[in-house]
Length: 99
Image (tube, rainbow, N blue to C red; front, side, top):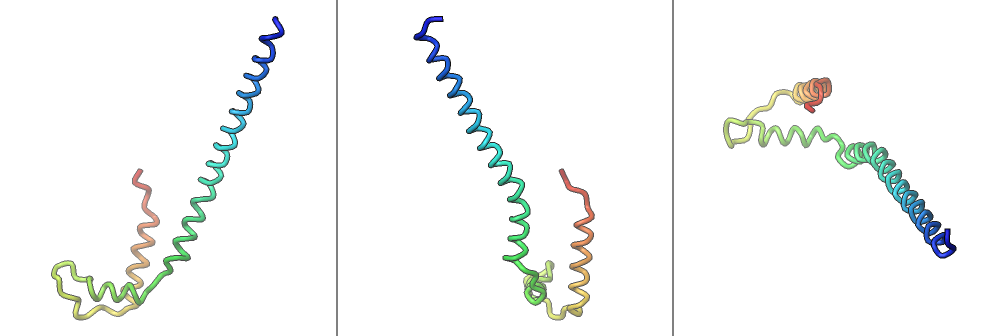
């Protein structure tokens, strides 16, 4: 080998190794963000949007009748409505994913 070619090959190998390291760090960083992002998002939703039973009952009173545009004149007892909502959530949780 001639002396003028040797340094070029060494520089090319070093550049390739650096590129691979940078790509691996980026891929690892994206994987960590993806793994930690899911639980953080779920906890954020629970913290930012707490369960509001009074708001739910007010919503039902105002928009509860799908057959007309009038508000519902009389709602069943609040405990029954909340129990039905909990039962619906339990049923939905037990269903398989659609995908």
